[in-house]
Image (cartoon, rainbow, N blue to C red):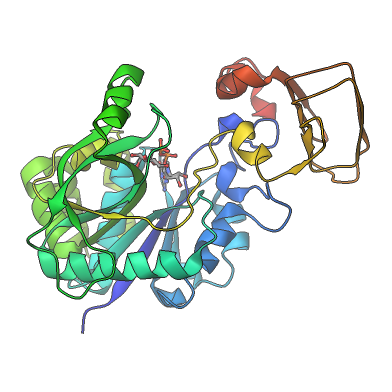
Amino acid sequence: MSQTFALILAGGSGTRFWPLSRDAKPKQLLDLFGDTTLLNKTISRLEGLIPKENILILTNQLQLEAVREVAHELPAENIFAEPAKRDTAPAVALGVGLVAARDPQATMVILPADQLISDIENFHSVLSDAITTAQQSNSLVTIGIKPTWPCPSFGYVERGGVSPLAPSGLKNVPHEVTCFREKPAPELAAQFLEQGNFAWNAGMFIWSIATVIKELTTHNPELANFISELQNSDDINKTVAEKFDKLTPTSIDYALMEKATSVLNIEANFDWDDVGSWISVSKYLDSTESNNKTNSPLVEIDSSNNIVFTESKNTQVALLGVDDLIVVQTADSILVAHRDKADDIKKIVTKLPKELT
Ligand SMILES: Nc1nc2c(ncn2[C@@H]2O[C@H](COP(=O)(O)OP(=O)(O)O[C@H]3O[C@H](CO)[C@@H](O)[C@H](O)[C@@H]3O)[C@@H](O)[C@H]2O)c(=O)[nH]1
């Protein structure tokens, strides 16, 4: 019987969370909620769905040690560092090659490492049905989130009717995808919301090895060739070292999903948050009556709508006559920003000395 593997993509850089995040410690490696890292939550969420020996993680050299520490329960040989940063399309192709080497009949679940999902029961139910669909439909299966605002930094799928390829008896029924559009301009995203039949792409992809190779062969021969080289290689590490950094840097959404022939979508009936900024994190922090959010003890006078995050949770915070600020304190840096600028923190990072990024 063919096996199911999870491939966790954990090699992104997290400049939006500076000064807490650094090149070697991006969002997925941060403990933003006072319990554990997002990567740890991503691995734990798979318990009961995919066995640990079938969970693979791809990261980069800079983050490898920290990822190994967080993912210590996985077999060491399941954690790989890409030799160069090439975005998610080459990473996914490498993952397909690694899984194909273990089981060419396998089904794969590609997962981001940095999302927050707490309804595990429904997450498992949706993914189980997505796995069954991928095995029986020869399609690339996506997960759709009901959009709440025209966010320009997500992908969008246009959902058609129930797919004629849908296996029978599923609780979560796959729909056809008539269009996949990655990161549309704000006006187009607004149009999608108005139309009403678009969902956000959750960034998770479920497919069989055979289907993804077939789609790549048609739509992205460069990545299909790379996978074929891995499959024919006597020494995968050597082939990766020689070929990976020559691949075109792009995301899997542009490299394949926008062009793919057969894409299906299952609606997520679980909570989902991609934790994109300090504003998103603040939703989960303690709040005062004046809507000041913090992870530390706080006193306030005439201050409202501030977000204060301290690396050491026992730091006393005092707010006096200030509104709408984001303040983040670590051992070596302090960020003070207007909350309207939460999405621009990455711009500040470009001005900082290298040792602080
Ligand atoms: N291994 C590896 N992982 C990477 C790399 N670049 C990014 N990642 C990881 O891949 C995941 C997604 O990458 P992002 O770069 O954060 O993607 P995005 O811009 O948020 O867009 C994707 O996710 C959205 C939902 O959050 C989707 O809506 C969108 O369509 C797309 O799939 C994250 O877990 C990130 O750490 C890389 O070069 N290598």
